[in-house]
Image: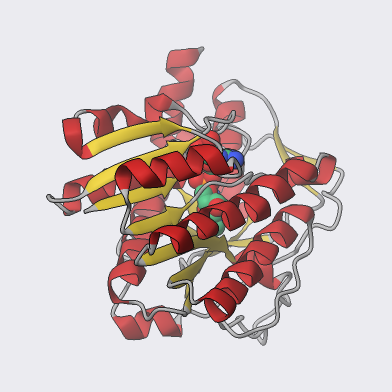
Length: 320
Ligand SMILES: NC(=O)c1ccc[n+]([C@@H]2O[C@H](COP(=O)([O-])OP(=O)(O)OC[C@H]3O[C@@H](n4cnc5c(N)ncnc54)[C@H](O)[C@@H]3O)[C@@H](O)[C@H]2O)c1
C-alpha cells in the first residue's frame, strides 16, 4: 500500500514519514513537497535509507498536473496533508501564499482523492482555528464542535481548509478525517518558530525577544506524540470526524523562555518587543474525543523539552 504524505519534508511531516516507515513494514511512503524555505531534504535522510519503500516527489499541492501525475503513478490509498504555509508572522505580512497553499492546495489534493477513489484523506489542522481562549482557571477548552473563530490570516486559511474538507465530505462523499493539534515541538523546526529562535539566540548570547509582555499561553505536544496521534486517527478514528490533539503542557511564553535559559545555563536576557497584530493570548482544546479512542501523551514535557533544546543547541553550535 502507498501513503502520500504532502509536506513531508517539513517539521512534523518528516517525523511522520520516519515514524510510518518504521511502524508499517509493508507501507510505501510517497513524500510530496515543493521544498519551500521550511522544507528540506536533510529532514529525509533516514527515510532515504528505506530504498523502494520511500519516494520523494518535488511538487506543489496547488499544481493540479503534478498532483495528478503523482496519484496516477502511486495510487495512494491514504493521503495525509501536512503541506502548508505555517508561520503566523509571515501570514500577517503576506497572506496570499497562505490562501493558495492552505486552501487551494488542499482542494487540489482532495479533488485528486475523489478522482482516484482514495480510501482516506487526512487533513492536519491546528487548535488556532478555534481562535483565542479565555485566560483564567474557569476558561472552557474548545471541543471539536466549537465554532471556528480564527484570529489571523494563517489560522483563517487553516479554518477555510477545514471547512472545505467538511464540505467535500458532505457534497462529494470524500472519505476524510481532520486533526487539530496544540503547538508541536521537537527537532527540525525552521528557526523562526519560538523554541528554535529562543535557543539560537541564547546560544549566540543574544536577547530573547518576546511579544508584548510574554504572557501568552501555549500548550505543547512533542512531535513523537503528534505523529502517533495522527497515525492513530487514521487507523482508529471514524471517517468524517475531527479530533483535537492537546499536549496537556500549558506554559506562558515568558516561562518557556526562562526554561530554555535554565536548560542551557544561559543568562535570562529577555526583551519585550511590540506585540504581534491580533495576537491570540491563549489556545485551549479539549482532548476527550481522542482519549476515548485510547490515545495518550507519552513524552513527559520536561524530558521532551530538554531533549529538544539540547538538539537545537548542538545544531546551532555546529553551524556557528
Ligand atoms: N508546528 C506546529 O506547532 C503545528 C501545530 C498544529 C498544526 N500544525 C500544522 O501541521 C502541518 C505541518 O506543520 P509544520 O510545522 O511541520 O510546517 P512546516 O512549515 O515545517 O512544513 C511545511 C512543509 O510543507 C511544504 N509545503 C509548503 N507549501 C507547499 C506546497 N504548496 N506544496 C507542497 N509542499 C508545500 C514545505 O516545503 C514544508 O516541507 C501544517 O499544516 C500546520 O498547519 C502545525
